[in-house]
Amino acid sequence: MLSLFTSQPSYQPREQPTFDVYAVSTSATACQLRYGPAAVRVVVTTHGKVVWDSAACETTRQGARTLHLAPGVPQEVELAWNRKAAAPSCAGSLPRGVQGTFQAVAQADGHSSPIRSFRLVS
Image 1 (cartoon, rainbow, N blue to C red):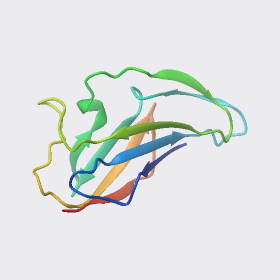
Image 2 (cartoon, rainbow, N blue to C red):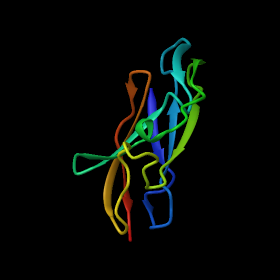
Image 3 (spheres, rainbow, N blue to C red):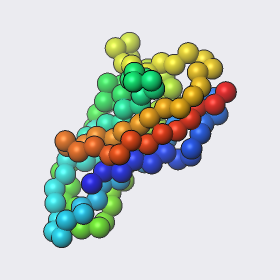
Image 4 (cartoon, helix red, strand yellow):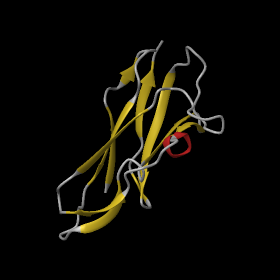
């Protein structure tokens, strides 16, 4: 099971939204999951449009490995969004002063977290 949490419910203009993604086995036995900074993807949307996709924006995707998750023992990956695109093909640059409610979802190895909302304020 994947869970995504934001470090706070809203962010001021100079603050970077930070996403904590947790993977945990909810079965009675251990399971395997390809996990790590290179395997976790966070997608941020607003009004149905993608404004940031960590997989598209990441220039170096290292650190994915297959983990053996013990039941009930979470593994965490933290990703931060600097509100800018890392490459021209990367969705993610927001005009200065953009505010409102955004939604984020984490994905890893075919699994998705529930959607989490947060705000950007000016």
